[in-house]
Length: 111
Image 1 (tube, rainbow, N blue to C red):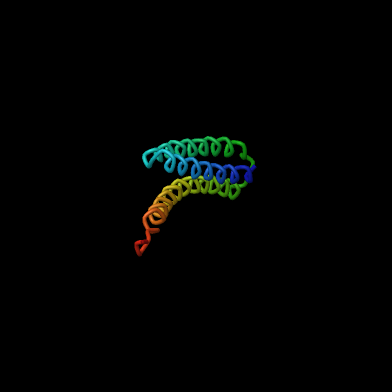
Image 2 (cartoon, one colour):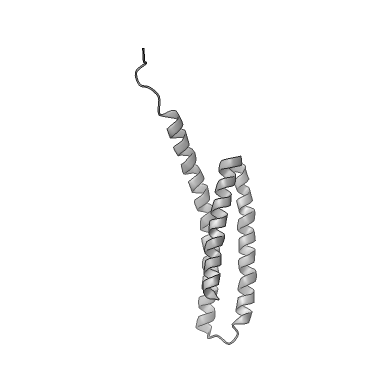
């Protein structure tokens, strides 16, 4: 079960990165705000799963419960960092496109 939780956090992070970056590149920078909605939704799903999981492991040791709580917190950090990475990738891609489009000019006129 805990492996599923970790996998869910990683997949959620990739979904946030891919969708936010695609929206920003295809439709403009302001569409990246939809990534915030995805981020909040992912964190809400994570907290719901955390409550359900913590209720399900009532017989576990306190150490196991503590580790499970840390894993859910790690998922939230994965999703938050995924959103920040998508914004940084957007800036890097925009700078790369700007350099590629503006730099290749002939130095000497032909003729």
